[in-house]
Amino acid sequence: MLNLRLDDFMVELKDGSLKNVGPTNKKATAKLFDVESAEAREFGDKRVKLVFEDEDGNEVQVSLFPEDVRKIAADIERLEDDSHVFE
Image (tube, rainbow, N blue to C red; front, side):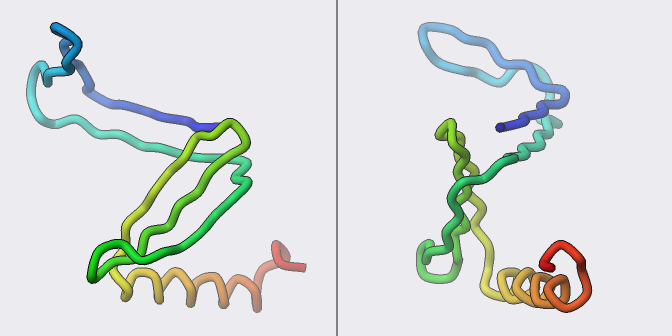
Protein backbone atom coordinates (compact mmCIF):
# COMPACT_ATOMS: atom_id res chain seq x y z
CA MET A 1 0.00 0.00 0.00
CA LEU A 2 1.38 3.37 -1.02
CA ASN A 3 0.48 6.34 1.16
CA LEU A 4 1.29 9.69 -0.42
CA ARG A 5 0.77 12.99 1.38
CA LEU A 6 1.22 16.27 -0.48
CA ASP A 7 1.21 19.56 1.42
CA ASP A 8 0.61 22.98 -0.10
CA PHE A 9 0.45 21.29 -3.47
CA MET A 10 -1.31 22.77 -6.44
CA VAL A 11 -0.55 22.22 -10.09
CA GLU A 12 -2.21 23.23 -13.29
CA LEU A 13 -2.89 20.70 -16.04
CA LYS A 14 -2.74 22.41 -19.41
CA ASP A 15 -2.37 20.72 -22.79
CA GLY A 16 -1.29 17.49 -21.08
CA SER A 17 1.48 19.11 -19.04
CA LEU A 18 1.70 19.79 -15.31
CA LYS A 19 2.76 23.26 -14.25
CA ASN A 20 3.49 24.51 -10.72
CA VAL A 21 0.89 26.93 -9.39
CA GLY A 22 1.68 29.16 -6.44
CA PRO A 23 4.79 29.26 -4.26
CA THR A 24 7.52 26.62 -4.34
CA ASN A 25 7.06 25.56 -0.70
CA LYS A 26 5.55 22.17 -1.53
CA LYS A 27 6.33 19.12 0.61
CA ALA A 28 5.56 15.44 0.19
CA THR A 29 5.78 12.29 2.28
CA ALA A 30 5.64 8.83 0.72
CA LYS A 31 5.21 5.62 2.73
CA LEU A 32 5.16 2.11 1.30
CA PHE A 33 3.73 -0.68 3.44
CA ASP A 34 3.64 -4.45 2.89
CA VAL A 35 6.82 -4.43 0.83
CA GLU A 36 7.24 -7.63 -1.21
CA SER A 37 10.67 -6.96 -2.66
CA ALA A 38 13.64 -4.84 -1.66
CA GLU A 39 17.02 -4.47 -3.30
CA ALA A 40 20.13 -2.31 -3.23
CA ARG A 41 22.17 -1.48 -6.33
CA GLU A 42 24.71 1.01 -7.58
CA PHE A 43 23.38 4.36 -8.73
CA GLY A 44 25.81 6.46 -10.68
CA ASP A 45 29.40 6.72 -9.49
CA LYS A 46 28.83 7.67 -5.85
CA ARG A 47 25.46 6.45 -4.61
CA VAL A 48 23.48 3.38 -3.68
CA LYS A 49 19.85 3.07 -4.74
CA LEU A 50 17.41 1.20 -2.50
CA VAL A 51 14.29 0.00 -4.34
CA PHE A 52 11.15 -1.21 -2.55
CA GLU A 53 8.03 -2.60 -4.25
CA ASP A 54 4.67 -3.86 -2.96
CA GLU A 55 2.34 -6.48 -4.44
CA ASP A 56 0.40 -3.82 -6.37
CA GLY A 57 3.51 -2.65 -8.23
CA ASN A 58 3.88 0.57 -6.21
CA GLU A 59 7.57 1.40 -5.97
CA VAL A 60 9.70 3.71 -3.87
CA GLN A 61 13.34 4.39 -4.78
CA VAL A 62 15.82 6.07 -2.46
CA SER A 63 19.31 7.20 -3.49
CA LEU A 64 21.88 7.44 -0.68
CA PHE A 65 25.56 8.15 -0.31
CA PRO A 66 27.62 5.22 1.05
CA GLU A 67 28.04 6.80 4.51
CA ASP A 68 24.25 6.96 4.89
CA VAL A 69 23.91 3.32 3.80
CA ARG A 70 26.54 2.31 6.39
CA LYS A 71 24.60 4.17 9.09
CA ILE A 72 21.39 2.34 8.19
CA ALA A 73 23.24 -1.00 8.14
CA ALA A 74 24.60 -0.24 11.63
CA ASP A 75 21.10 0.68 12.83
CA ILE A 76 19.80 -2.66 11.54
CA GLU A 77 22.61 -4.56 13.26
CA ARG A 78 21.76 -2.79 16.51
CA LEU A 79 18.11 -3.73 16.09
CA GLU A 80 19.06 -7.36 15.47
CA ASP A 81 20.88 -7.36 18.82
CA ASP A 82 18.38 -5.36 20.90
CA SER A 83 14.92 -5.58 19.39
CA HIS A 84 12.26 -8.29 19.71
CA VAL A 85 11.39 -7.66 16.04
CA PHE A 86 14.16 -10.04 14.92
CA GLU A 87 13.26 -12.87 17.34
